[in-house]
Image 1 (tube, rainbow, N blue to C red):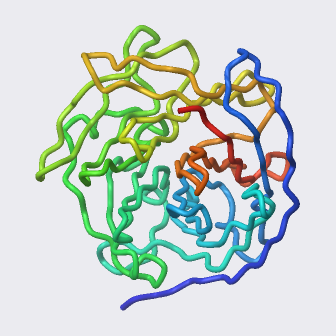
Image 2 (image 1 turned 180 degrees about the vertical axis):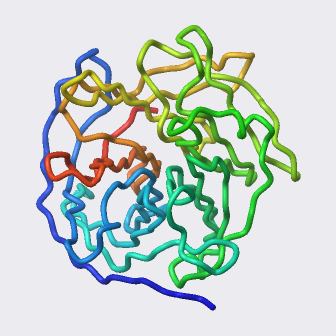
Length: 301
């Protein structure tokens, strides 16, 4: 039996526009952010760890780390700057047996969406990836299992498959949040033709941890990183050449602590003027003193 939990929300927020100072002197262009708000009616609204944005930058899907998905619209001014948002639906995810996902199995972290509307979600705790058809995920449709690489069983608790992305050919990519040692790179796993393979790795640099991934419209692999400084989160976006054992990186954007909230999800799109944009969402960990926001940054090509 299918069960459905859906909350219609309407949130409007003013954009906070700024030329943010970047701690490392790296970065794209203009930055805009809007509050994703909260709801006392649904304790699972918040904790957003993954995001996908439509190709025209007007729709979004934000994944909570309590196995729930919000769908909504992004509002923009005539210049295309992000000025607000409207949440249209907020729905609990349903497992392959038709039950709402709860408890140990509910720590959903990474979100990826095909152009045909099929969704993929990666989970920590019980490390796995599930998939849903686009017309089912917002209507209580059951998940389907994806095969697992043997390494998934050995990943650290609460530090596993945070980042998830799909390339233009439909292959799925993921990597763990922690590599196991400061000197050990992060392995990148690729799923295609029914098989998982390690296709490369990205270098670990101190406390920076990968938490979001996407491909841009030119097929370039892009990662979102975070670093907890003890009093706030720093964020970094890198683009990687997919060559060699360790994929070379270029820093596209970097902030000091407290510039944004705990940014975890990443989605890339290109506007009608040809500007590449990165949309990110922050995880407030369901704490009133942390920010839940969607941030958009202009990136260089």
